Length: 342
Image 1 (cartoon, rainbow, N blue to C red):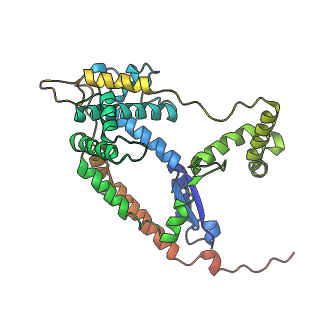
Image 2: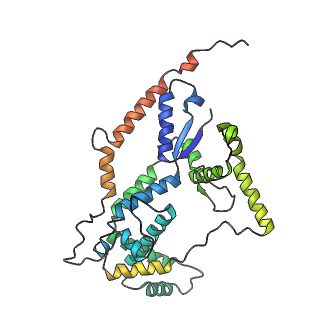
Image 3: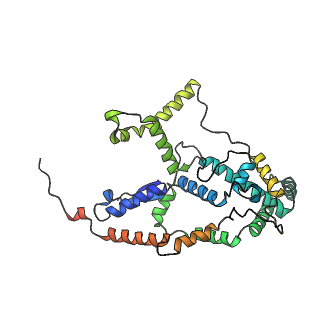
């Protein structure tokens, strides 16, 4: 039997699982989709994670300095285009804001636990080992120690350890051969270059984009059969265009330049220091209309296990019903059709 790995967003995977459940026991594996292994695409998982972070930590844009740790306030400090949770910007813009804010927070907390500026701290690390070309053990050990202080002071170290422990023992979701197969195919390398791996669902999204650009048939040619013929050719056509542009000297490259974020990070670090965001200030108040960020782990656990229609209960019911359906004899296999005479 052949196993097919199918990845995509949660909605697509949900539709596939619904089709599997409705066809289970009614047809053979190829037509009942029982040989499909649905995977949540890593790119769509990234988009969901970014949306979740924004929902929790974006804050009220009108709160301004009354909520100095919110992402909306950091977005205004960086003088970037304002947006709301009901009209989110592209994934790259949201991810850039989160990464810059997170980097500034970590470096600011590092300056707090070491009681020094980043320049002084870098000079201190350089003095720990007179020959950095040969060994970086002492500076690295010091950096690890200071990072541990950040976890102990500004994060829940026990929660982090529990998550790491759960990750180490999470090996029973699929059988070992299937798990290894999935881990080796969750990323694709369309260019064949070193360290150029991308999520397989992102490759599919790019493929969908170019198919829509190339597939402009009208009339009788506008059919699923013609789409199936032209779709595999889109990548070859793109490579041909790139080769022609490179030969004619009009090819400008495929890589975007990375902007310098040091000024943005420094600006956020100064603001965190001025407003004492990570320091206890007696009597300090915040905007009452801007609620504190929820504990995502606690709220998620409550929605997962609490109530008769919790996420875990619904999944168990779905799993048991699908299991019963697949244990039934296949209808097509039990009813052999006589050969058709022409």
